[in-house]
Image (cartoon, rainbow, N blue to C red; front, side):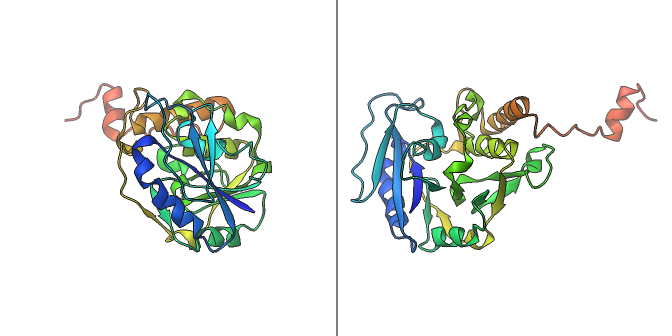
Length: 245
C-alpha cells in the first residue's frame, strides 16, 4: 500500500488535522504517516503533539532533519515501501495521489507534482538529471531507490531539503519527472508560524541557504557547478582600464 508521509512544526500543529484529513480522503488506498521529532532545533522546549484523526500513523524521530523529516522519518518503517512525501501547509485533492501513481511508469524514476530546472538557480546540469522535485507538490518514489547516504545531509541543507534530496537523486542516476496532470491538485493552506521562504535559519536567508546547499552538493558529488557569470561590456571595459569617451 502507498504511504503518504509528512512532518510538521509546532506553529502549524493547529492546522495539521486539516491537511491529514484531506490526505485520508485520497481516492487510492493509502496510509498516512506523520513524523514528528522528539525535539526541534528551531523551536526549543517540550513538543506536545496534537491529537490526530484515527488511522493516522504517528512516528517520533530522535533527530530533527528539518523539512526532510517528511521523508527520513518513515524510511525505517517496514510498511513504507512506496512513499509519497508532501508538505504540511498544502491541501491535496482526492485524485492527487492516484494521478501521481498513474503517471509513475517505472519504479526506477521519481515522479513529482511540481519541479523546476536547477539552471534557474544558475547551476549547470545535464538532462535528465537537472530537476528539483518540490515537496509541496508531492514526490513519489520507491524506497529501494534510496541508500543510507541520503541521511548524511549537510548542515546547509536543513531548510532547503528539496535541493539536497534532488541533488542526491541526480548524483545517483535517479531521474525526476513531473506529473503534469497532478499540477492543479494541490493548494496552499493559510498556516501560522514562520514561512521558510522568508526565514533566516542557521544565519542564512533562503537564497543564501539555496546557494550553500548547492555548493555542498557540488563539492560532494561533483554535479551542478555554478554557471560562470558572463561579464558585461562595461565590466570588460573596466577590467582593461578603459572608461570610454
